[in-house]
Amino acid sequence: MIARWVRRKLEEKLRVSRWGLRKLDERLRIASVVREAVAKVFPDHWSFMLGEIALYAFVSLLLTGTFLAFFFDPSSGERIYAGDYAGLHNSRVSAAYASAVELSFDVRGGLLVRQTHHWAALIFVAAIVTHMLRNFFTGAFRRPRELNWIIGVTLLVLAIANGFAGYSLPDDLLSGTGLRIANSIALSMPIVGTWAAFLLFGGEFPGESIIPRLYILHVLLLPGLIAALIGAHMGILIRQKHTHFAGPGRNDHNVVGSKMWPTYAFRSFALLSALFAVTFALGGLVQINPVWLWGPFDPGTASAPAQPDWFMGWLEGALRLYPPIEFTVFGYLVPAPFVPGVLLPGLTFAIMYVWPWLDRLITKDRAAHHLLDRPRHSPARMAVGVWALSFYGLLLLAGSDDVLADLMGLPVLTVMKTMRIVVIVVPFLFAAAAYALARALRANPEQRLSGLRWKQIRKSDVVEEETRHGGS
View 1 (cartoon, rainbow, N blue to C red):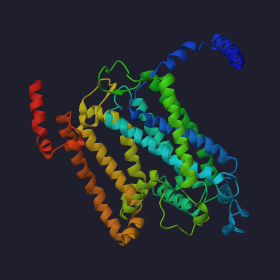
View 2: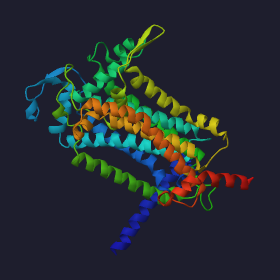
View 3: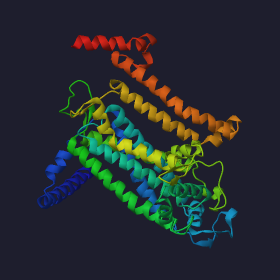
View 4: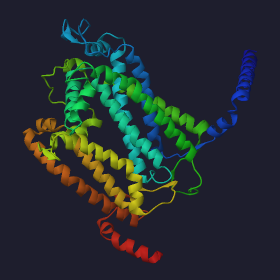
């Protein structure tokens, strides 16, 4: 009796839902679009979920950031702290710093959300980097996907910029040290440096305009641009269809995998749930950026040892390792911070932007590709990628040279001088090893890296030569 009543009620609700959907489709004509969308096929390989991790980390950032925006005061104006943290009672601090500490001690759940937001930011940038590495090593940047590669590089730049703006907002001693470095980098630019620094900070450092300006960038302009680019990225992806790895029944004209509904949708929802679980677990269990310990920013003080978030660590390492060399160009002085702080990042992202065309110029490959390469298929690309990974990874390590010196019981200058040599030499050694291994694996298609033998590495040139002559 009860089951019959429940069934009748469900059928009535379904009839009402179908009626509503029919009326909606009469006005918007979206039924065919929805049917096509739910029938879209997505590859099953795990690496295709890296982009979704970035997307869901961004969703987590938006939700936690909205909560934080209700309580944060983006002002450099001073006030007396009267919150629950006894260590700052009756201290005269900026409103931004006071509200950050109050978020951590006075707002219910504030510390959890603030730390979750910070961890989600780290994961967001890490997912973008890992996703782009997958695209690089598999050749997914090639025609016709050059535009999506450019969008990906721009997303990375915006994510790094927004991350820097975000952790600079609390106006604590650590973030203030980072802003001082940013001011020095801006001042190092010949001709325009002084004007650029004054424009950014609204006068002499530290000024009172930088916190409100960073806040608008962090909560409005940069997230809006990131959201727009994510939408463009997804639209191009849907229009061009997914790439996939070679295999039985797979070619440049199809996609083999799972349909959007229901298989991929449930898998994607599980990933969303897992990411939220991980970020909130990290936010609740692993302390990050305890601003109450750093203290408020003081222009005459710097925290030590001090390291920025990982996505800025490579820039910090470059600044620490570059020797105090200044030179003049057309009569204009080029201070030491310019090369590691402006020239290196500029060249890095410029090369990333034009890489699809550089690859096409070198390989003479102008064909459209929908099947992905295995990394071993292009030893030269593998060598370039490993060089870049090791170079920037070592710069990241150099950004903690003071911590390394403390752990090893060595003078900081000794560690710094050693790292200058290591950063130049080791990436080329790693690149040469990667090239040799990729070439050997390409000559032995069925072999795995773990099962590769020294003789196969040495004979890879002979095998490739024989294969080339045999094919001709």
